[in-house]
Length: 442
Image 1: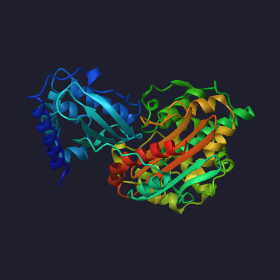
Image 2: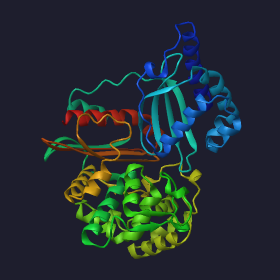
Image 3: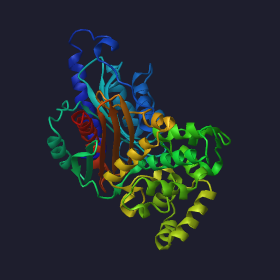
């Protein structure tokens, strides 16, 4: 079934449910109907909020409004006119809406939404690096998740997910679950943990201060996720502010400012210090702008990269750094990790960098790591939660370091496939299993 037919069919199912509800009692107020959850201020979270705002606006949304936010490949299958007509006619009558559940990464998310009419529905959204919608599916709310009753069941369900899956659950030094935890796999934005460790090391040595000011230049801008790329040239942020944005909302431009200030060699040293089993795989350590350029930019640069030794690769990266980003976010569609364009580590390596960050004892580091406990996830009763997740085309990752008075635990889950759609479709279950692992490790 084409995207257009799936889109229309799903909306038709929801419309029937909404019309049937019109004969029932008057709807409850938004506050009493369902408990709401917060949508995080990630790139896809902000786009999700924008979509819901359109659905609740006083006036119908116009095709032009939707055309500005829908990726051109989406519009080849479902036009902006079709989207506006179907949503205005079949979804907007059920407003107002309350988000009762949310799970997501930086670029893809699933929200369960309750309206004033009909049954709750699921809204699945994915975006590109320019925040344009590449996928939007409305459908009946999925069957409520049945929590796993043991870590053996978590392992069984993880192994049933599509693509390549790695997982590690530790309680102290005790290994409670292990699925290919030594296998090197793409990290997506979890790589930013290494940058934070390099920042902490530089601060500890006196070579950097949390209060030092970094200045945004024209050549510093990367693609989203994040917000700093949209700020004016000359915008100033402290190291503390950049590091917070890097972890809390996975800001790519803030990350690159930090890498530029530190020097990539210092980040490479942090990778080795964390106990990465094969630190050479992250040499030279690339910024997000460099990765976008190599993975989705001029093919000639990829050929040059493939033929170069480490020194040649460093020289190529210096050239990329000196010029403004030349990659359109619309190009970032197909997975590139299988060609080596991502950051690579194992689940055991990720657990190692989490532990090393905790061992710094730096209150700034520990606070930054705990600002975002997991983008809408239920992390149970753990009083301290350090989290970093990530997503890219065909990749989703999540990592947690949690602690209470009885000790600590680490949960690392990684999933990747050359078929980005199957990863998006399994993301809900992926994060439910993370919740189960965090609960069962307590």
